[in-house]
Image 1: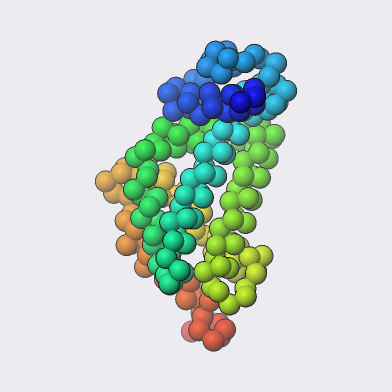
Image 2 (image 1 turned 60 degrees about the horizontal axis):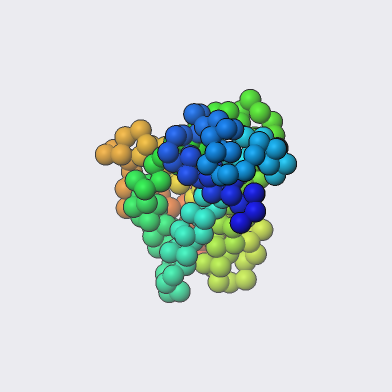
Amino acid sequence: MGHREDLLVAARRLLEDKGYAHITARDLVAASGTNLASIGYHFGSKAGLLNAAIGQVFEEWTEQLADLAMADPAASPVERGHVTWAALLGSLASKRKLLLSYVEALAQAERTPDLRSQFAEQYRRCRERVAGLVAESLGDGTRSDDPRCLAVASFVIAICDGLSVQWLLDPESAPTAEELLAGLGAMWSASFPPHGKADDVSA
């Protein structure tokens, strides 16, 4: 591997071992066997490297959940949502330290425009990926850039993020996949009514 890959591997390991707020640039250099200049050259800063590592981890996690959601070709869109949230809940314990690092990083991003932009771009890619899965689930030629697909994608991501935070604070009281399923069913029916007829939500 090159220095860039070595740094990402080291950052991922340190995020789990020490947490975002306690990692120094020298920690990263020691763990990767590289040098301080490599951090600046490849990522701009220590924070840029750590955020890139966090983004990489969560993009991989998104793909794992997507593979599970799409594994059964006969599953309905609502069933896919249920599978996704059940899998998310089942994997949170193994991702706890990384989730804590992610929350710490978000707080830092508020004060650092470059890092905020980095996180925003990661969310944009995630939203587009999930919107593509929504369109694929419909199977009727709807494009992934359809506003409804993007809206559903944003909803699903918001639920995953909110569920993760609730689980971090109080695992015993976090919503179950079944409870979330009821909300998804209502939302999906309103977004994609039968025969393309929108429900009269004003009634």
